[in-house]
Length: 308
Image 1 (cartoon, rainbow, N blue to C red):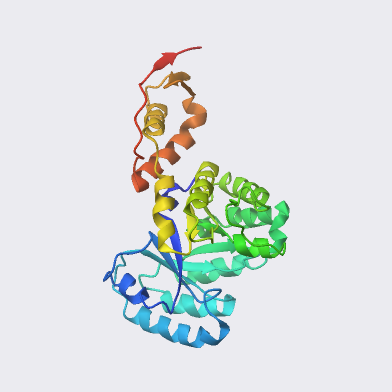
Image 2 (image 1 turned 90 degrees about the horizontal axis):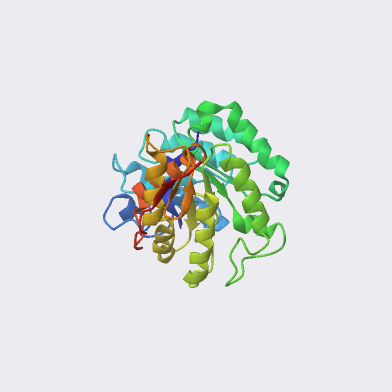
């Protein structure tokens, strides 16, 4: 069963917990810069700033309203900090935990601690071992064996920069993740996990002023079935949201495929539609439209021709 509700994550902005705008965003005093935010105490903070970050987080949590204007998650540095943050976030408007550097051996512990706190979890796969498809399959199998915990997976995140670091590489301007060395692991990991019904989020493009490459990259992310994308600057958010919009042509074809009176095979707008095999695509398309809307494209002339 595919989890298309995860599209509501949209662009997920990572923010240092010490960022001066965090409190105003959580309290609705300023517009949220993305559909979801991650208050980060890991890579976004230097080691020396961690005590201040934890102190700030304690104050933020104590002042949280009952309902937040944005989906909010916490990102600890390690499992010990994760346990502490779970205890602090339990019963608050914080939605969940972004678990860093998850491995098959540690995933059950992250699932247990977030379950006990009634929080969702976003496991992050970012270690060199995940270049081995067997390790991705191990993550899938653990979730398959724990269906109640799997239902609390907000998304499985792929840590592109850490995966590149394992190759002693970094992102290059003008080159999408699909065109570089990440292309294979994105395709492999997403195929294994998405086909099992789990929502997967695409990694960040960290060249902030190259929005054209970001557009090309997120178009490919959407085509591959990713439900969200990490951003590190608010300027990237509109590009991502636009890429997730649905064409009017796709909406019309999706509605036709979901029509209970549809023929087994028919042509719509010059494209063959087969409801038995296109239903999941149609449901995904309608879920995207509900969250992101329809892109500004001229609707094609309808053409229905039954055959067979």
